Amino acid sequence: MDLGERSYDVVIGCGLLDEPSAWRSPASDASAMIVSNSTVAPLYLERLARSLQGRHYRVHSVELPDGEQHKDWSTLNKVFDALLDARCERATTLYALGGGVVGDVAGFAAACFMRGVPYIQLPTTLLAQVDSSVGGKTAINHALGKNMIGAFHQPRVVVCDLDTLSTLPDRELRAGLAEVIKYGPIADWAFFEWTERHLDDLLARERPALLHAVGRSCEIKADIVARDEREGGLRAVLNFGHTFGHAIEAGLGFGTWLHGEAVAAGMVMAAALSVRLGMLDSEAAARLTSLLARCGLPVQAPALAIERYIELMRLDKKRRDGETRFTLLEGRGRAVIHPADDALVREVVAQTIRRST
Ligand code: NAD
Ligand code: GLY
Image 1 (tube, rainbow, N blue to C red):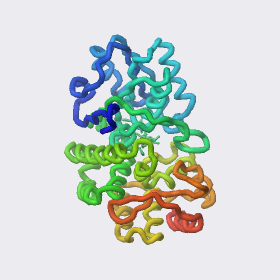
Image 2: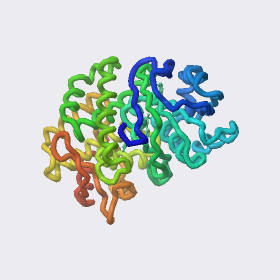
Image 3: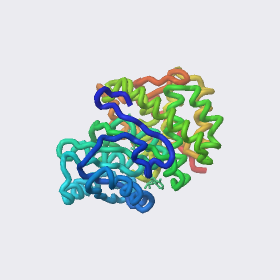
């Protein structure tokens, strides 16, 4: 991840949790705080703590409750409580061991504690390995909107140990694949076609396929973030499917649909909107829908009231001058940020909403 003096490595491989010498991180004689959750800690915390013993003179840990519904102030405060209880200092390094929720909360805690301490991402879900751990966006949710309170704070290194994906529930693997599938339509159509060909290998968790999917996804993301770290414009293309997706997550209640599931349905909606605006051919949109469906992801939107969608999307961070703006596809492998009027958006929502039979 090329960001001048804040550049860092994204290390991808197997057995990395047990091999800290395989990933360069700032030498530290200070303490460490591992932030994990009640599901991931029993699986991997002890191994990581053992690996870090030689690197830090004290290794502490804090276990957060699991779930998107806990990505909030009270969970964030648990990290601050643990840091202060353990007398941590400005040189303390935080280690985020878990999925995107742990990564976002731990990263935000690192951005705030003593006005900023270093942190390292050790993502253990596919979604976190291909997306949330890279790029320095950290946040918690607000009852009124997704990821509304947060900070940009880059990690010192990202360590994607593919072995951790072996314990990931199938539904979570599929949700992570939604973010892998996202990269092709927005930036690299050949990668989309590779994903079409290798979906079965990915679902079977074959290491070479996972390695390529995580590697190429991180390359695409790193290239975009390097050009627009603070989302002045370009970085918003990574939000393909997210304007609709965030509305689905908030509208159903955080944690009802997984983030990747909401993004999948959101991408179908954004592609449909792109077709309606004459920006994308309908065959490309159909191929995207079909790949997501093969992956077992939702391709229809949940039946919230259409006005509820419109209201929730008014909170989108891309909104400007009273207009909701969407990440849309302008051809295959190219995304742009584009406004769309409410009438057209209502039609697209109505078209993609799940019909009960
Ligand atoms: P998650 O963190 O909730 O993890 C999914 C589930 O898998 C959890 O129950 C978790 O405990 C469990 N788990 C994690 N690793 C496991 C493993 N190896 N084995 C068994 N179980 C495991 O969800 P997620 O999909 O990783 O991340 C979604 C979050 O990421 C959302 O809050 C989203 O907003 C955020 N996100 C952030 C960015 C960013 O740029 N910061 C980008 C995309 C998504
Ligand atoms: N996941 C969107 C971003 O990092 O910008």
